[in-house]
Image (cartoon, rainbow, N blue to C red; front, side, top):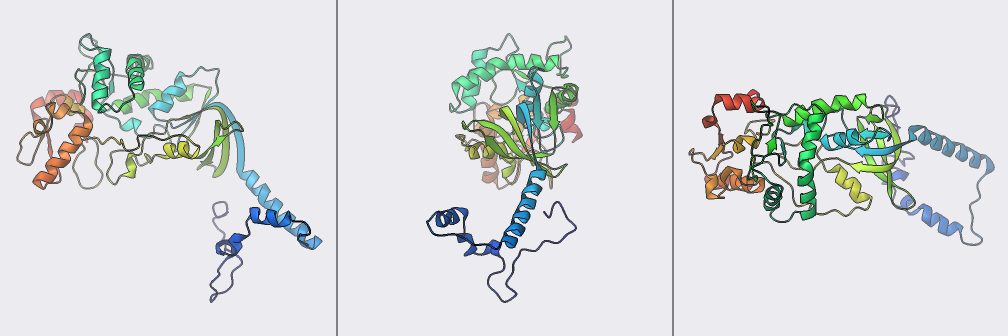
Length: 391
């Protein structure tokens, strides 16, 4: 009510005066005992009832009806074939991949492009070289996951990666190429081969800038921005069949029903005090799923990116490709320290590099280490890492 009428003052009532311990029925422990269940039990007993004056009863009925009418005016039900919650790369690419015969609603909490996808720098891993192999990519991934990864899931994702890259190319995403027209492949931590396609060092931004305008051109896709997903709806069979939302534009609550509901809501990195994730990465999709009865697993596996710029105030991520191209991590004496922790050096998986940096800082009592890329040369940095140089 305060949102609908911000110019009015609403008081909790009734109150019992300044000196009373009870300020409002809304906060009274005795009134809390008068639950609907307790009232139903009492009134179900023979001979019990509540006698109300007819005029009072009619006045109460009108008041209750006005409240019900007000609530109904604030809520409307919509229907779609596929409801996608989250408009990053996962949600956007799914929406664009579905057949035009399906009505698709793409829900996001901010205007597109939003979330972590536009902030991604390095690129995407796929087997695209004759020197590489599917089995090697799978082995690298399982090793980087400390053998905890689901093998079937890893194989499925790695097998689909080359087709995903070709799909992006068909969508006119400007991935970097070599002088002879081949896709330029770089290397990142945990990979034994060069298999990272990229758009300089701003791959996520380039991808989303190419895809987001295509959403507006697809008549079967409805974008709903600035909408907060509050709870998943389940039908009588227990299947998730929609979501309750709050539209920040209209200040209205709505329910969107759907034959298929997809959660593409990203991670939870911003629950931590220091993160290169967007502020919206709060794990809300995980909470939605859990409240709807989904089984949640592996929440302890939170990935930390090893390198961001050490600065006062807001910082930004330094792409892993800087180390993939040969950048070295140095301690405060200017000594390369990663070989002390892992034979792969700066190309070890992210969790190993992150722990090594933290251990090295504790060992020498410093609050940062150095990322040395001077030996890569100005031409390489300008060609492949213009965003890092600019920022």
